[in-house]
Length: 489
Image (cartoon, rainbow, N blue to C red):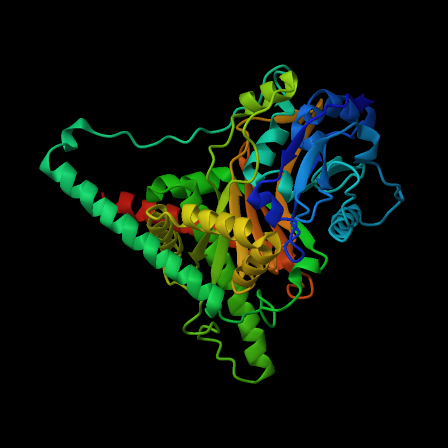
């Protein structure tokens, strides 16, 4: 089936152009595990009625013939058969899980075809340990930021219990203001808040500039040998593991924190376990291992980049309406960078990992770092071009160990064009880092997704296991603390 041709031209935003820089060519992968085998004809019909009505998914990237060679989106005729790929495979294969993992890794080495809109969907009717079949979207990052694209894909789904209803996702609830805080103290607190905001923003920008010029993370087993390693062009190994969202919420409630606080805390704990083991193996090779001491460096700089969307993400209903009516709306990459310091170390009290994570996130919330880095990137790209912008972005990111993100998902089971979904596991590749960790919630589970450079991290499944084990340890510490309090009472 073919989507009707529409005459429309739109210039790429500065951020979208950045994702086409020679050393910053980024793509989003979204793995969808289904509880039933996938019918390609049904999927194609559904895509024609929804996703292909979105301007970005029915537009090709073209270059002007002029000297400045500006990039533009041009609406074009789309043949869905060119975008939905159903590979051949051996039905008698010994290890289906490994086949799916290897196939997705192979996808990260395949160049995108720029003669058509920059997205594709691979359908693997291979029964694995977690799903009857797997669909894998590959979307160029210039089509939109990760959160918006995931929301758009969710707008193509429906509740399994009600095939006509869109999925529901948790809404962010802002803290309401209290009328009793007015007067002198309210003014004092507002001034103090503004001073801290300005101070934190200045300090964050100084760290950003220092990172651009000279400040690097400590060399470690997750970062590779040097900042110059070609991680963005290396094939990626993408693995995932499901953990209990209820366990995360239990810790959240007991510690009076947010899900983001807990997720960052268990990640710090898991990375600390993994790195301690890795450094221990290095020391054993040099006959320096003391079994009773930490193997981690005493002072370790370890940071993650987090992309923050600055434009309010459209609701799923709004995106569904946009596709149904083929209407235009504000869309694109409006994102800034935030550099998050990770506390790597062995804590005597496992709950200290989440306490320190909360302190870090609370501090970063009181800063305009994301807005400032976005504005700086726009200015650089508009003045010097996206190649210079890409070079600067690569220089900053290559000095930082990893990328990190967390996206909220549906509250109930959903189906993708009639195919019930078992899990959703999105990630990104193409940035100059050997490790990306992404969290995606879905009903009562949280999926941990790792995208790694296998030349640097040869055992990503072990890192997944360490993060999962860290959640168990922290949850058990919370339950033990409750028992002690109850005994005292």
